[in-house]
Image (cartoon, rainbow, N blue to C red; front, side, top):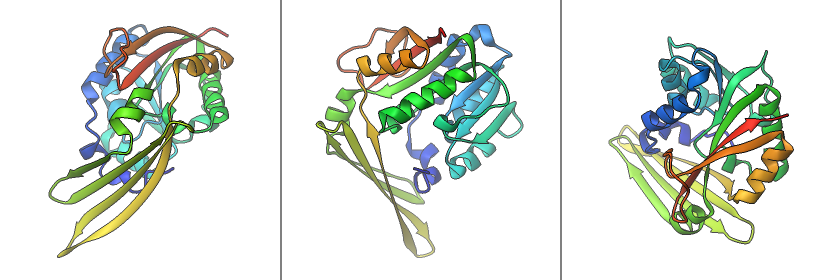
Length: 243
């Protein structure tokens, strides 16, 4: 999916705490300061730019040209290279000192084989013993927080309607977005849909191991350094390349 609709309002309606994410990642990669860090699925590039402000040379990749347009504005004048690439087709000019994929990137891989391929490509371009950080929406979030709920966001120019439909049997959550954008005396309507998959801890560890990674830490909450809890909507993994 290319975020053709969502890209227009992502930064305004996503509610992402950019500082919290960048602070967490900067602590993880503190020994690599000055080195090259890869942001997989960088989206609008706000976290990428914040990491560059913290002293890292950044590469951001995303498969959405529209999201990369936003990233180029947010990262203008900073030490950031942007590439239009999907994670499973990652092709860099050399190795990176660390990598991360935050903001539901892993959940967007609805096919387990594609997720494994993406992990393998990230591992291929990561230095030995390099760290890979990613977050996932938990099964609890898909079942309870998202479920079959509807969310609504608006500002002076746009209104966004987000419908969720989670199927426990397939472990897939369908997300339907309808965007109304003010134009003259009326509004234009745009629609977009995509699915996300719920991944359990066992499957993630198995996939990471097959890609040459070893889990070294798991944290619960919105990029907090604490143990995961049953009521967490998000879990953060830190893995190390071991082969």
